[in-house]
Length: 382
Image (cartoon, rainbow, N blue to C red; front, side, top):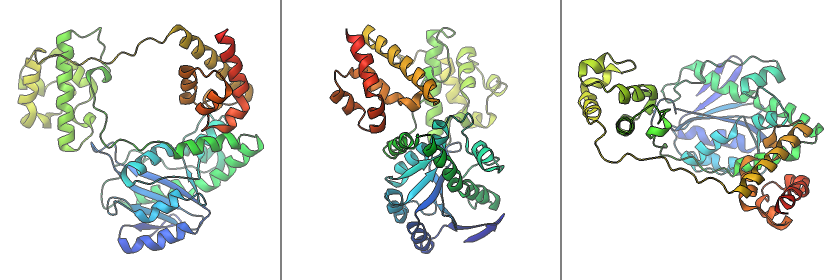
C-alpha cells in the first residue's frame, strides 16, 4: 500500500508480494536509515511491530505483525556493503535479533556519534532540530504500535523518524572526521553489532526492585509484598499486559504496608484498579490476610565486597578515564567503555598482551591508551 503524507511517499509493506520489490530496492542502496517500533508499554511479551527503512528516495514501513519473519531483509542487515543508520541502535538491534534472528554489520548510530561529539541533548528530536533546523513531532513516542489498522498519522510519524537520519549522519560523520574521532566511533558501532539478542521473557519483578525500603517494612510485610509481586506477574502474563498496567509498584507497597482486609476497603484503596476486584479480589484478600505466613521470602543476592586491590584499581582507572575525557573533550565512557574498564579492573592484566586480549574489540583505544593503562596498573602493583 502506498501512502502520500506530508510530501513523504511511503510504502506500507503488509503482504508477501510487496516484500520483494521493497527488499530489492533497499539491497541496491549504499546507505539506508532504519528504525523500529515496539509495543513494550502495552503487552507482557513485547514484539517488534514495525521496521522502518528509508533510502534517499523511498520510505518503507514493514508490518512485522502481519509479516513476522521477513527473511528477505536479513541479508541487508548483515551486509558489510550497505550502511545502516540508526538512532539509539542498541534497543532496535537486540529486539530484531530476538524476534527476527537478524545479524548486523556496518551500522552508524547518530546518538552514539552525538555523544562522542559531546552533545548534551542526544535525543533524535533534539538533534534533528539542532543540526538540521527541523522540528520533529514527538506525540507518538509512547503510542501502541500493535494496534491495527495503524492510523495514517502514526505511519507518517514512523516514516519521518528515518527520513532525517541520513542527512543527520552525514553532518555528524563530517564533524567526527574533522575532530579525529571517527575511528573511536566506528569501534562503538561495531560493538553494537555484537550486542546480544534481547530476552523474550521479561525479568521477573521481586519485592526489592519495586522501590520498597527494607527499613520501612516488617519481615511479614515484605513477604506479603513478594506474594503481591508474584500474583501481579502471573496476572500480567495471563492478560498479556505489562505488570504496571495491573497495579503500579507504589500501590503494591501500600497494600503490603496497610493490608486492607475487605473488598470494600480494596475498592476505596488509592491506586486500586476497580476492574480487578470482581475476578481477583478474593485472591488479593487471601494474600493480604496471610500476614506473610506463606513460607520463606526470597532475598536479593548480595555481591561480596571487592578486595582492596580491586577498589584501588577501580579508583585509579576511573580517575584516569574522567581526566582523559576532560582532556579530550569527550564523555569518560568514550575514552573507555564501562564493560571493558570493569574487565581490566577485575582481571588486572600484567602485560600488554593480556591487556590486548581484553581490549581486542576496541583496537583504536588499545593503541591510543594501552601505555597509560599499563603504567597505572604497574604503579599499583609496586
